[in-house]
Length: 253
Image (cartoon, rainbow, N blue to C red; front, side, top):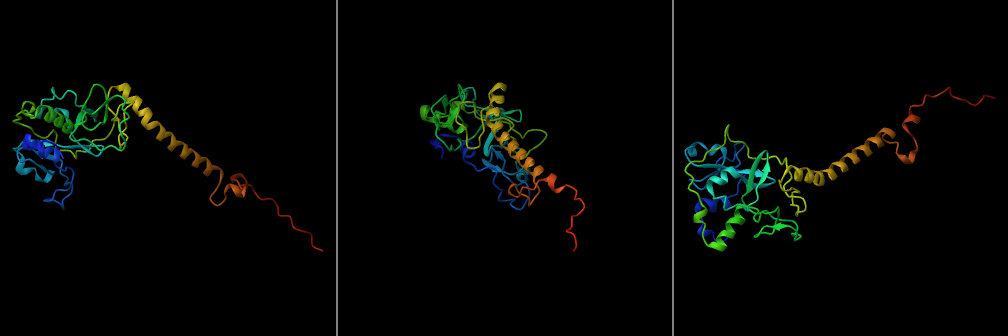
């Protein structure tokens, strides 16, 4: 639960507490009924089937990345003074920068090396100090008491062209930076290209090698032994394929 919520505008409270990507109750029998749009004027999450009466409203698409809600950094810049949010870490996926709305649960504690989120202690890249919009907002409210000077009056916001997508962003980068605490999803920070290559080497090579070794072992085994002729039997493929000669019978007396 977000602390000091009474000092926030209603749309921001709802944005940070709404459960997105749940099925829409109104259109529960329809396909693609996940709530992945937020209406700033009505302060509610809606699904694609609810769009018609909201077309003239300010609409923000919510996206899903590694099982958590994100918004594009460009959209966040229209709503919040992100220059003051300079220490909020953004991530790159599908060639777009995104920021997490809320802090993510961790499966292990921070090791104390490098930067950590001031609110939830998640490992971050230098010089970032906040992992999500929620953590940054909580810090401002605790230190300054109000968020008024950081809120923009966004008069117009519409869904991206060519249209609304399903909001699912493919993790084509690793989220957490090298040397930081890895997340429960095994993702990594989207720093520079060198970091990205390094993260992929560390995070993905081991799994790939295990799979390849397992497959090569199975292939070798199958090429030597047929089903039912295990190593204990000593019967190889070459022995099975050997042509039989003329049968030798014992002489008749």
